Length: 223
Image 1 (tube, rainbow, N blue to C red):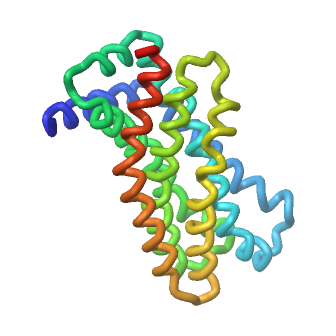
Image 2 (cartoon, one colour; image 1 turned 90 degrees about the vertical axis):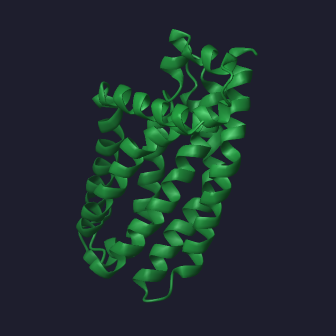
């Protein structure tokens, strides 16, 4: 099983590298949202600093959601998805490898870009470790939950809006905990409680969402 997981992870990573637009679009969207926000509310540093925790997390959430619409679409169109469903290997393991490859290239890049954009908003340097920790714990949850919606809407020609309607309500706890931890760090309060809850949600998502994604794909391919 580990050999199959590794081979699929390497394959999906190579395929993503061949489609650089899918990697850059979420990052460009994330950067543009953060860069435009000071123009909308004004350049006052104190106000930007106060709003930065919520802004960073909302922008990250939307950037991840933007990248998920086509997660399974190419596999659905070329018939690979049907082969996955018919494969003797566990489908939850296969989809976990695909989502992990997507997160390593899209989600992790977003995490690495976030500190630079946070400094643009005036976030103090002491808050950057908390920002990185929350994004490292939270973005995998966003990817896994979004993959559930992507699996259910993969057969629809215009499933992006439906995907957002299905998944955005599920993102609310992650948004609250992620921005709450960053807000606590900004005020000089301990953020360990928020981080522990995020870690618990991450473990729960890694355990349960592959089963939900596999069930959604079986429904979509009609098996």
